[in-house]
Length: 220
Image (tube, rainbow, N blue to C red; front, side, top):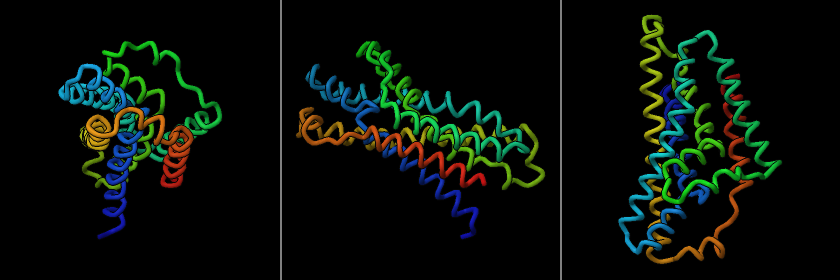
């Protein structure tokens, strides 16, 4: 296995692992799915809520990745794009680590608007932005032959990778968050959050800094 194949496999693994990480984070919404099921006393409510959360997360991935998908056609600016994305992600992580602020407008989103809530959370907390350095590493034009450097072909390839990244990441998030939600709903109960869960706020900010730093290092 050559270095390029190894790097590509590692980046796709990062997409999956970040999905697992986002799914396990209560801040991404699985406690809301449990609350919905407990309130309505229907297991089906849990599945509907998890589906809504996943859809909102997926849409947020697309909104953030789409502009970068278009910009990857500018092959000559590949390195500045990757450097800029890494700096942006790391800066957001540093800001979250220092300020520890939570956007208040999220609390004003009605409980039945889970798609909108999940979409906004993924944007403001940097969950979608975290994927950008990974995505740019996967669709970098440097590994393409001259015949595929046409803007149209590169754009199509980048768009396909964008959809793959968003879908695979969201699927991994749904599996992890759904599994935790079902365990909490069936056996543990929401009191588990106040008694046994640890605060992931600092870890979340540090993970953004780490991903951004790795993106900068890979670009250099």
